[in-house]
Length: 494
Image 1 (cartoon, helix red, strand yellow):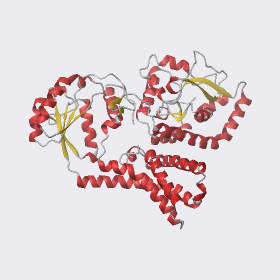
Image 2 (cartoon, one colour):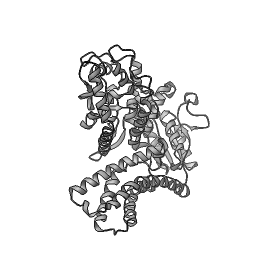
Image 3 (tube, helix red, strand yellow):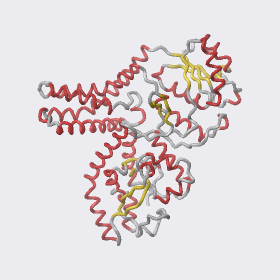
């Protein structure tokens, strides 16, 4: 994942800057429902793999304990199958292990499994059925299931690739429009071996001198040459990547292609927009394209909230002695309150009160708030240590349990800073489509501490928006892991 610039799109690709190009690459990748193609086999395995393995592991645990698979275990199996089908539905079988290390993928599975276990335990006590199950069986099931699921994921990905390689014929495709969108679509098709699709080249009415992304060999002709080429070269797929402004040309082209058997896909050129969690949806049967949406809608929001609660409670149980010691230190070393409360913007731009251990001799929360600077004489000697190690942020885990913050998300800024930056930084307020976090994607990529210039704040905001585009539970765990490594060696904290 990398930082991207968001600038308006220009119709002529040769006029686009490298930063615009990088943005459009990221935007194309973020359009989940429009760029990911699942084959029937992949879809079937994706739906059934994790629920089936969970039930099979339960049956194995019962057998190893030497017990009978009673009707109560049947009920438990059906319940866990239905719950896990929803909890694991968004885990990709053949892409999940490419982006993050294996231990992060295991952590992703483990956290989802903890959610399932918590639901099952709650229902068991609520219905008073927990007494009908053997504790050794349940304990063994709870422990070995995450390892089994990770192994099943790795095995399924390998099996799917070999099955598709052996059974699926390679399809030939051409792309209409040698622009940024067409070029990136071509690259993504070629990179995805499961598609078994070979892009023969591009059709575009512009001269090759105006097409810097393709070579002479890649340009197969103009649009008028396409129908004959499709008939003569066994083309199976046609991807139309012309901009919306070319509607008359697109209609004329579709009429000319009616005499072929090629499948035709229209790739909408909506990447001129700043896509945030873009996806295809339906409203009473009418298809709509979400351009800017929170990543935490529906079940994803539940996963995020449950993970915050479980991790928040776990961390607070570990750090409460440290918090007690820090609180006493603040009280004894300088006059003033132990906890510093400041107004920040939370979800949807609503004001929240954020807690921190006081590290300064002042408690600013007015219309003007001066950011802490290196060698700032307002910082107390103990406060300097607390800020350096981020111990001053520990009370924000209480904000997490209150539901006002998340463990991972864009860092909240003072209200005064929000009002200033929203006027000068495009898309600044979009970062408030999620709850603010104790740590974030920008902080683990070098943007922790003072933002002494607008350009530095822009870079921080761009990382925040990149987090919104690409959120996953694995990414949250990866950020938490990097934060732990970063805390004691970050020179930008003061």
